[in-house]
Image (cartoon, rainbow, N blue to C red; front, side):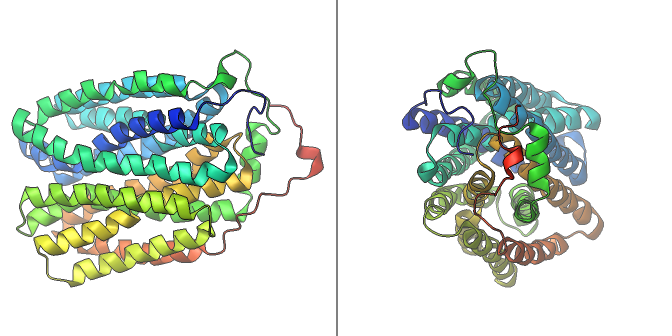
Length: 411
């Protein structure tokens, strides 16, 4: 259960982490700043917030759907080809986001194209490489490093995106990012896995159908998916709608930019710590703590007077808990099922995350347009955090016991 192709030479850990971290930094860093475009685009085009939110909701759902197939392709052909295709789609999607003049075109480019690009350039694909190329005793830690890179990308890129909007205008800023994201393609050269160099796929002990049937019949996999649904709902709602929430309450756009940057900065610490702790303590306890901590942080944020300082404190706390679910969740999947189909199974877990993301970002816009407030969505996020904490506690992390007749099945 430990390797997709045991006989193949491994890439160096430094090479995998450096290239993987830089790719995630760029891909996730750009994505985390999309909330900064909500008001410039809706005001310039005369669209409602729900229109913008729906396109990003489609993006998150497309990310989840395409993530399944990107994971299958990465497990079958290696990560390199998937990353290159993802980089090209990302650039095209950002160009479309800048030049779209109709809501349909905006939804197709910002939603479908960029969603598919995220599927091929973010965690599921990168974590598949980490799982295959690094030994099990370093896997959770390495996943924490990659997730921390995505957080650093948010800290680095969100202020840059705010500066680009102010300096170049929102359309030219998107075109500049479209050029920058193509750097993912040369970085992907460092993740060309030796075991995928030939035309024949690595031999596996299970077929795709067997792996999926096993995972979806396993209770702990279902619980991990339920918890990840909540993660998507919370972080995407906050990431997209918090800038507008703060502006609605009289705070400047700079406060929102600094808040998102603080989330990214503190998430570097949180994701690394979650990955490192995942090597030493039950990952289900880490996940339960993260989800319950989010619920408490949101409740206190709504209860306290809204000032720049309260926003920065909330952002720092949420940053510690932001993407720190990613290393323990994916490391648990690898620990239970092995790494032969890790990108694919990670893609299915992430699909659940993206269904939550779809609902979080879309409900934010929908309920705001109908009630004039984000309050109800904040309350839903609190309740879901408690739910996710409870469902992660029963997860069993031990490797699954496979019947002898299933071992050795040819792919």
